[in-house]
Length: 202
Ligand code: VGL
Ligand code: ZN
Image 1: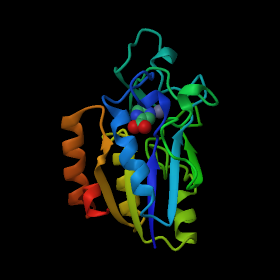
Image 2 (image 1 turned 90 degrees about the horizontal axis):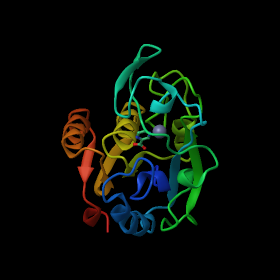
Image 3 (image 1 turned 180 degrees about the vertical axis):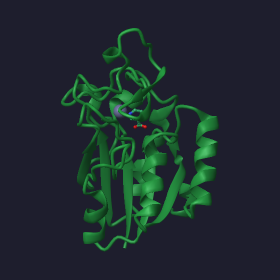
Image 4 (image 1 turned 60 degrees about the vertical axis):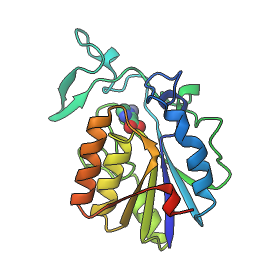
């Protein structure tokens, strides 16, 4: 059984949003079309309390994109984004949501960030996504969404280590930084994951 995992296709990550991925909206038509090819579609949603410690606004004297130590983990300080139950946290209105069977929210603990849809950045707590997928007999997982160098990358690494045959659909993913994304794709390949184009699925 193969499933499609759509990562964080939320208003704050598309142009006009608080933490916009350049041209991030351009992946949405591909993400929509991809859904037709899967019997199971699942999504993640970045879902932070307003006092989340990944926000630069919570660190007086620091500015956005500074890197700090947060409880022993390296943390990039982001603009306030995807605050729970705000419009920025909503899925893009252009994203087809009818086929999404489950939504896994992450980043809810103010003390730790959570790039992956499977675990927080310290691997302390699972979201339940891996067990959910195993419960659905999923063996192959295709990932698409935003941002390619953060949440898609970290989700793909965890998907591999959780034992799923993992495919990152590269034209249905865009990064904050293209060089970081190139390195991320190389790392995914080295870990045994696959980088594919949507045309290989259609
Ligand atoms: C993300 C930075 C902070 C992402 C989420 O979805 O890639 N990036 N929070
Ligand atoms: Zn976030």
